[in-house]
Length: 343
Ligand SMILES: Nc1ncnc2c1ncn2[C@@H]1O[C@H](COP(=O)(O)OP(=O)(O)OP(=O)(O)O)[C@@H](O)[C@H]1O
Ligand SMILES: [Mg+2]
Image 1 (tube, rainbow, N blue to C red):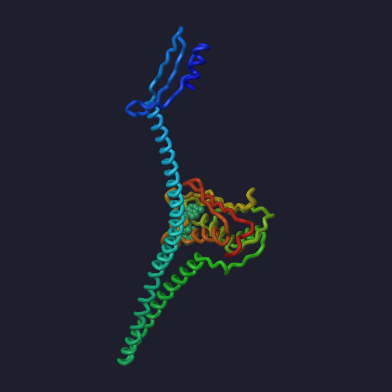
Image 2 (image 1 turned 135 degrees about the vertical axis):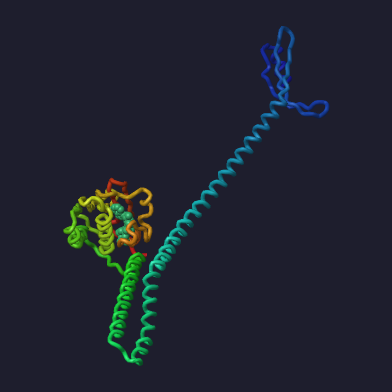
């Protein structure tokens, strides 16, 4: 090839196309040379250019590049693995958080029950000791005044016991509502307006005594196949909350219950009040069991927890609370027309 090139330029003039060749030197070293040549006058001038170093650097660069690609591929795989581990951990965390929530609920109930049951127990043991004392009195000859005192003690003790046991029974009742027993609820087709009317009737005595008004705006066409009992309980709790919490400082206000079909095929229910709103630091806790800002003033803090478990459980929907201090509260619920089948 080389010889043919030389012949060509000798006959026709012009230049040799630069050609790279690998040549071995006398010492056996291999070098990359680029040869070129041209007829200058009657002479053929041949030039060569040693590119061994360039080629070495180039080869090294290619190797590094390939290595880099391998490393990137390897890292990507590692990252993908890490991501899936993270997702699994996340799911696990959510599960354990739910369990922790249940644990906290049970611990809370146990703690709350401790006081009334402890009180009742104390009084019961006092009453047990009263029997032998009464016998002693009898043996010694009972005075009228002693009999009166004894009867009065007995009366007071049983009242304390009854009060405390009633409190414990009430707590167990609300706890049972929290641990919603799916099978105990009746499922049937119904019109949503039925529920709204029932809500108005049940709550009318409360609103008669109040300057807060209740407005209902329910699409009369909405027909559901779901659980009317739990749904009423949810709405009752929400309207009641608005009545109790939203208008403490202002005697007048409005609570509005609305329901219409959403474009996504879910029923959109909202209980909205124009009351005091909820502080941002309180907002994330309102669904927690036993969270109440009315501790010792009639609040057990189970209301919204029950609402949450009914909506997301048996009714198969979702719930969101939007509230700002001074801007009122809006509780938005999205429910499927047909509740999910029981597990
Ligand atoms: N409409 C509202 N406006 C202002 N605050 C509200 C409203 N609804 C709920 N809250 C706040 O959320 C807290 C939790 O409500 P939740 O219904 O769980 O408990 P509660 O009403 O205090 O007690 P319970 O319902 O068990 O009698 C309330 O204590 C109150 O601070
Ligand atoms: Mg409540």
